[in-house]
Image 1: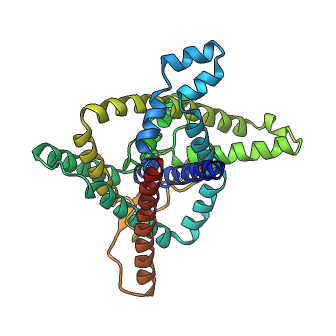
Image 2 (image 1 turned 180 degrees about the horizontal axis):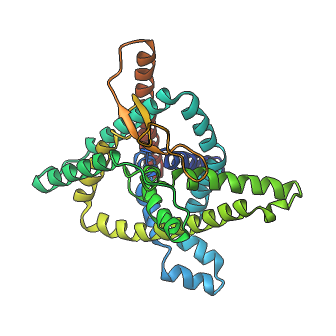
Image 3 (image 1 turned 30 degrees about the vertical axis):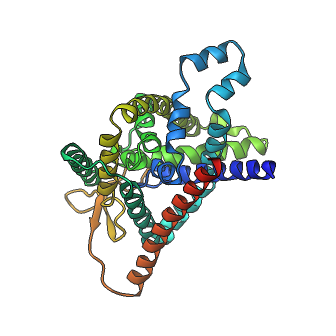
Length: 339
């Protein structure tokens, strides 16, 4: 019975990792929200915070089993396994769904964020002048980020490293969408699509016994970009976890209020009814980047007409809310079983 439960817990951890990885790839959605709502956010931050000087000393002294236990290795490895699998499976499915069913996908995400706001706020009792200011500033910051114009793509490796640090913040800070920040910085497609596809193609070539890619300058460049981005993400993940652990310990209520504000502000990012606006020249022709892709300027948001498509979108919003409530129910049930 215990072994069955342990196996079930492992499977669910991988699924949670899948959900976090998929959420982090979608602009406006934060993997941290998944962790927060599913009830493993504090364990996630605590585990990352254990990657410290003591952990590195254990590793250098070849005490691998002690290192694994010290950093809560089983939890982190299964979670990251799900995230990695997500980047090559679930995220590709999401890419397809966004292209072909954009309105309904954004509607589901909108509902999930609404559900997240309900989840975080329902047990929050510490309302005072300070927390009201915090939630207001968080909402203003979230809205401000939503309406910024994206920059042009930049593959400078120092800038890519910085993007890695910033983008991973969505895992540790619920409501702060790292992928949307990458859009603002102009590197979303480069880092979360092109470089990942380059790695996928390289793995496929190696498995096929084809090593011609070593002569492909663009492929090698993309692999370097992905490696530096990954390094930046690891540095950011560990750094943010230490900072957040301190903040949550000393300023928990203010932090939670700010997170709520961020999530409320991010509703503008995932508003389902919007048209993509591309950058144009004075003559009206589209501006293209170095790879020939159209450059996104921002989104033109509008109120929908009441028709069948809108009613279906509303159903998907309700589905998104139910998904979050389901995660909440599972998180609560898991905690009760552990007790």
